[in-house]
Amino acid sequence: MTPQDLIATARDLVRRRRGRLKQAHLKRAVSTAYYATFHAAALLVANALVGRSRNRSESWSLTYRALQHGFARDILIRRDVRALHAGIGEFADAFVGLQELRHLADYDPRAAFTPAEAVAAIVDAEDGVRALEGVPTDLRLDLAARLVFKARP
Image (cartoon, rainbow, N blue to C red):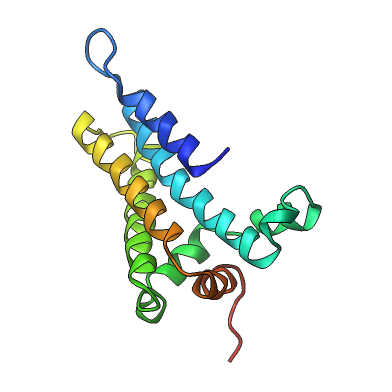
């Protein structure tokens, strides 16, 4: 499963079916858009710290799973992290914004989304993932370490 697979799944959920789209489809699309950014970050972490060529190893899987939602958000809202590269800032905007929407979609029974809002979330995910892919290798390693390791004073 790749971030692009998740984006495609989110798009499938908002495709017009007969009649009106159900809130369940729209909420799942918004949530899935967030998970595309989350998995893009997890992929970055595992590939940068362990190596793409070792993606079948236990160490790669453990590193991929090391990313935590709240910790990643806390890192991505930091001004010094966002300033490392424009692509990191763009990815951070998408990740943080979509995480907030995911919380509404998944946990607020009163929350409702329009098809346009769901599509906008998907576009944000797509743009964020693309921006992250454009970050230079040395900065990807720096970001990966920041996303999973707590800095010590």
